[in-house]
Image 1 (spheres, rainbow, N blue to C red):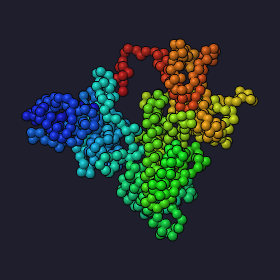
Image 2: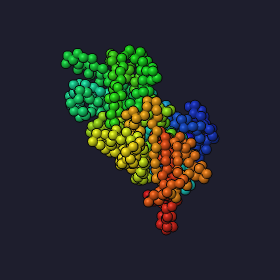
Image 3: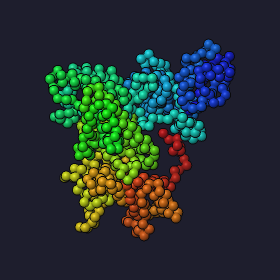
Image 4: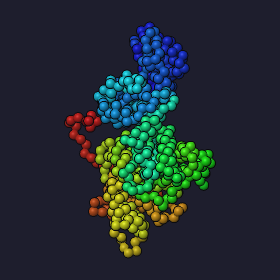
Length: 602
């Protein structure tokens, strides 16, 4: 996306004139200017330079009495559903922008582009061409707080042209690591709302002061810090503390945190409350280890640098549906505010590292968005929480799914609920997972509560088969559901076995899983001379065995055995399911030649 279109070019203008303008404004170009009547084209070395040319020249620089118009050059076949919106006010709230964009159709994605301008830039994909066209016509030049929006098409890699989908487009614009969620912030370099909100616990007696008369105080904090603040008053009725969630940029979160601490301090003085009011931050357990650091070094450094005392709640306080730990910070308001910045910086770094790892196609074929692992455009409802990064070694963490705090209000961690993939409802799969016989009680829970909760949470059917005999050392757990449900259910079972000490502190949890495949497809899993199964083992680090002397069952199926740690098992399972899908597609009857082709159906 480095080719530029230069419009409103005077008939007197030449390539030399355009070259001099680019050189005057120190904008490099990587090819000759192709000048036509009234317009021109030029290539830039990279996307960053192209964006600089647009921001610097378009509508601002004259050539022979005409203001130049500069935008991305987009082939007609790629003028589809994707737009770039520039010159967005730097402190614009996402709620406002979302509402504006939604007036013209379904917004499938909206991602911020890093630029060096004071205003924000986003790439937007609409659900249909006519929606994008209408948005371009209506929003180009639209005034928002004295800022005139600039809207143009950008190459749509998914657009289908005569040569097939995506040809001719460039992926020069890298999306942020995750789907957008947030708002451009103040400052020279616009930023979006952090994907990790600030979660605080405050004494219930101060909640009224934080809200203020008819909500005036909380509205002022929201306005001044450009934040969205949720006070979960209805959660944990009768509890001594209530959670508060702050959605904003890191700077906005810190500013809101300071304001809330100052309000509590003032209220304490007014009500003659003499006890110390520490800052309490809630953080997902998956991030806390990296906050603490090796031998506690990170935490000790934060304490020394900010002159605070920091303690963290014990692991025993965690539950399946409350995976957050409480970080208590004691010190002056100024010291606590500094400590909050450092603590949340470490937590956000851990989150970003996890997202980068999970986005690296660790488990091909798995719809990671439907897992509820990553922030997205959808909102509303209670959403599942974060999964840990792939284990870096034999003591790597296991996925810990749950809710930040149970309740009916907005979810504290920004992860969307599971949803079917774009291709439609995912196909249901059955996996047979073998666990130690002694662990059955822990998986079932008192009166079956744990397995019921896990089943509802994962969206899977989970049953434990009867024991093969009195002395059986293993029991089979039958899990039925789509890929994302399998990932959640199996991940939680692996984690539960570790938590309940069925494996030693330095011992990696390795389980055996069975998948039944049609006997006719077993050869595809094995591959010629065992090539496929060997490649699969090298890829996943799991042990994969297809016993050769099996007798197919009544459904003409045989068993594939997979042994390994959680992520190894998941990679192997997904690859095997991918092979089975290929087999099924090849066995499907070919469509009749009459009628429109599938590629043209909407």
